[in-house]
Length: 309
Image (cartoon, rainbow, N blue to C red; front, side, top):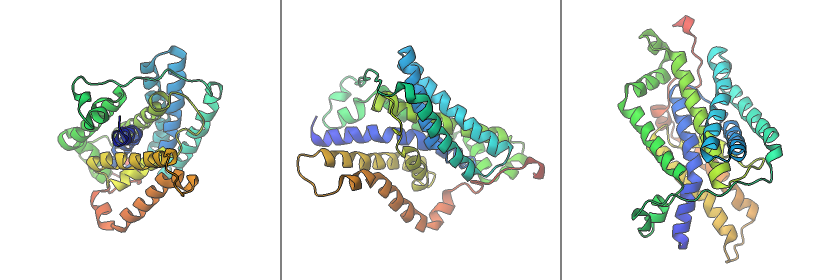
């Protein structure tokens, strides 16, 4: 595999967990719920996936456990914000901190343990194509599953009644409630999906990317995924583009650091590049207020009180 193919291959791998988490957050925010707890849900998903896969020697068990763990933690956020109508930003931050801390506690006995590497699932003939073959058709099966999830999300939002209902709740929950839509149920389901995708993103890190558990292995990817949704202005295709763009930034700093050519850039600066890129992109995007207002759900971050409907 030549250098360019290696970079593109690694970019797809690095962008996959970002894409999973950002798709979950996109659906969640489309319902009007701003869940900032993705970092904690990724962490709890990562540790649950590793513990289950290590204990039962089953990758599928690990993936399912990560997905369920993320969804369960998102239920905490859902109950506090949907039923108790607490502030969504404060609750999301609390869930993020709680999830990271709980994952570190639960994963302590499993540090320094490793799982067998999962081999790529190469698609016959297509994986032999030059350049795009290994990049698109020589990945692990979870990458293909992520593309299927992306296609389902696009189809759901654009072509189904459920997608229209979700967007109606996100735009005006009072109006949606007036026509008989169960706003609480829709918001619960959207939050659960977001939590499950965050847990799956964490499972990807501890099972497929680096088959091990280490405290802090999520390393801010949940926050980057949250920023991706704003970068994408709540449009699925831009989420896909942004995930691999940020994945490319994350990978490029690794290639530069490991390059045999001496580069006079501090390693700390290179490591901070993904986060610097996130800040720069958010600042640039926030300057275009018209674009953000055009696509962002009108009720994002606002509680719904059925009694007043």
